[in-house]
Amino acid sequence: MMRARIGSALAIAALLGASACSSGDKRSNEETMDTRLRNLSQAGVYVGGVAYSTTLVGIHFEKTGDNQPPFMRMFVSDGLPGGVAEWFEGKAAKDTFSFTSVSGTAKIEGRLDEFHVHGKLTLAGGQPQVFATRPAGDGAGVFEVTVGADSHWAGKSLDGSTLEADQLGPTIDGLVRSARGDMYKFHHNDLTRRLGYAKQGGAPDKYTLIVTRRGTEIVGRGGDVRGGKPSDNIIALDLPASDKPTPGVYYGRVALTTDKMAFDIKDLGSNRKMIRVYVSDGEPEPQGDIEWFTTGANAVTGNTFTMTSASGSAKLDGTVATDGISGNLTLPDQPARKYFAAPAGDGAGIFDVTVQADRTHVGTSEQGGKLELKYADGMVMGKVTAPTGEVLDLLGADLTRSYEYGVDGSQPGTYVAFAAPRARFLIGRNGNVRGGSAGNNIIGLDKKC
Image (cartoon, rainbow, N blue to C red; front, side, top):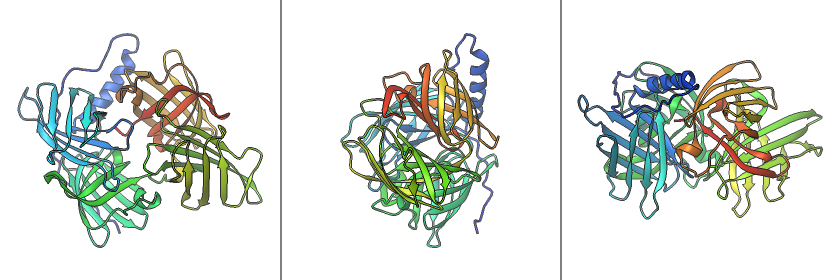
């Protein structure tokens, strides 16, 4: 049984710079966004990621006095075997910062804006990579967590939020309780097991973890991370289970890549299925991946399938089981990689989306879900309505802006997109996606930060 504890409250407020508001007839929408972001920022926690990677960035701010630059503690990790685990800390300048990691092998530098802490990360032997974070709150942050021999997890974040969980094989049940007392339960899949990593996660150890808002994603490393000496032990949790999955809808990830995928399976009776699959990473060409698979009129009999994409350049095989779909995906000029897709609800699905002249996003899913989002200054805010009628609020960032992709996302036009549960991601392309000829305009929205 999961054993929850109430953590002590520790309020840490960030001391940051100028407002992201702008003038014009979008003001009321921007003020609403600003209010949401400002409320989240009161925790002094920012979470985001690094462009073209699965690496997360967690930041905690601590005031050092009135009108003084804040003290910053930062953790960067990807939850991959032998992957990234770097700790940084120090006092910012007025509105900038530059730190070397405690290991001495990485550097991070950037700028403090009220709702956007961003800059460049340089890992050992690598080139500078763009990173971007947003106010997180809702139990997000950098946690110190102990995993015992009994697979029970317990720990707290730098702001006093707590985490408790129990692991049973490839799944973990737990909860995050924010420093204010808000509680967010989660039922996660262990990516190290679902995606066949070279090392399984969750071994007994003391871990430093990045937890995104409401415990949606959790990654980190064991050992003395803050001393620059991480162990080989890893944690990588994602694909949280929906309480009420939409029949036939699955959402997944592909091992060791930024690729994500959505399945739509229609039961035709007599053990026959029509399967449609959308794979994309929300990144621009030439790096971006985009493939559509469908059985069309050739229904699959049974629970296994092999498919070629509409473009003719990608292959997919898999098995449908009660707890999800697993198999291998081979994209052009890439090796075959494992994937896992979990049953998904909370508004997840494949959508036809129109981005209007004012960049409002309106869409309908193949399962009857709806979305309506307002766009302003690289952020979107709105709602997704699940096929059940459940309404889910969304506040997200346009990654083409945050990660400085060099293209402008969410341009007016029509798109085929897919949404993760609770619209955590909304990823899509224009053009004839279903015919295998996608365009170059992209939707790449992310609300984890």
